[in-house]
Image (cartoon, rainbow, N blue to C red; front, side, top):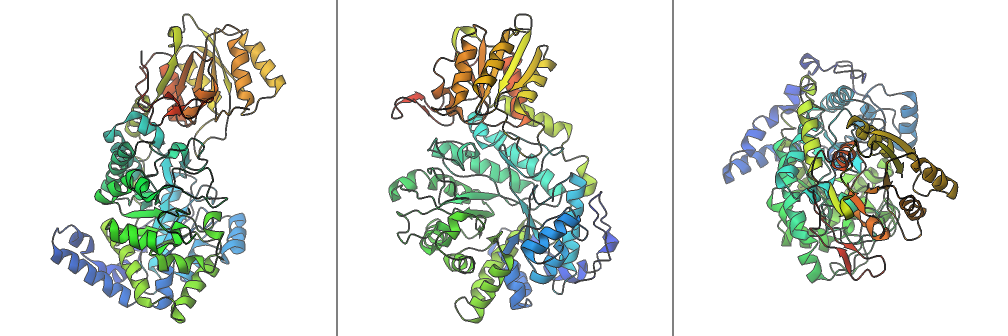
Length: 616
């Protein structure tokens, strides 16, 4: 164990002191000027940067080189003093007690934060954890800053919740069609992440979602039009990286047309090579032109690109042949989580990291057993299956990324900026404004909307209450009711769930008898869903009914009798509050469908095309 007594990481607030970093000058002296050199737009500047970085690599032991390739989870709010339950989980899954022991043992180059790993209690705790990790790493012999990462896509996938600013998700941004909003999202989110010591975000999603049944991408995609997706991907990349956070385009070569979730199965994409060029490749090309720092692989089989049956993560034809050589990408390639079933189906956990490196990967994300994966790579080098020079290539790319984003020169969080950066009034107001530009009015027969508190004073909000995305208030019916009440209505919430029983439907219908209008939150309605029964029974009461599809906009295809329907594309607070303002007529709906909605009775025909959207 290294001596970490030079600093305290309790997770109760910022404890960083510049005087508590005795190793900083010694460790980073070799990188002095690296970030500045990267800004020099000349071949000489780039060559000088690489010379400095190669010098760092030349001093690493083989074990240290192997560690630099891994990005792993670790449990706990503190690098040195996590809760006992997190110590127990670390021992069980990682064979160490703390992040400090993890770094000392494996010399990992990156750590990923998760809410479920108890890394993200509040902004000051996150900053203290980040700085605790950096102190431990820099105190190692030849220690280097750790690249700290997370999945902060916004919308359905966020790891850091309130009081950080939570913005609309990708499909909502797609409905808003604003590059400036996408860039603002990246800039706001990036500034907040960097203040908390996070340097790499696994966003944006560059998949083109053309399959309404896609269980893993869906609203995480900007939409179904490859050119529109490409424009928003590039804008978000620029926003994040302008704030000093590395963006990550995912999931190469494209995960938008699958009905299988790669967390639990092995999806097969049946697109031809020609279709891939016209559809899936377009946003990744745009991300590369925008200078994206990293590209994440997809655990998908794509026979038109590689007929071996291997997942793209392990495919040299896909990652080296196409991504590196054809698309000209020389940034960092990172795997999706190696704990997902899609990459574990064909090979054992000891072979996956070795095959990924042979395919062209640089960073190995979150293997199920770090010890198995780390030792497998070490053994592969010692027995000649991998060369040390191959490791050096990836480490150089990783160090270039760290240098480009200033991590080598200044890896620390900025706790003094948290109060004026994270969840500020200006950022929250920007999130509200962006959300208002995304809410999409799909149907409004007979001028059902907007509701007027003088006419529809008593509003009943019923419907699905899926678990709220990380860090939001929820549940959706409660958030909608509270927002409508703030707008002058007397709104009450009645949760009926995603599969309401007959008794629950009866209860909702009875409650509607005392209301002037009803709002129904729907969530992934299918042909056999009892959510359809709920809506039909409420329509039969004669009360004005407005449906709010809080996830997929495809719900409307299953609800043909509905006379008013909004799509929010996610059920985070910011999107639901915007929907309430549209319901109340405080703002006009401006969103346009970024995906087509097909008829339920004839999927070959479009019910509403891309670009459909009504207004007041």
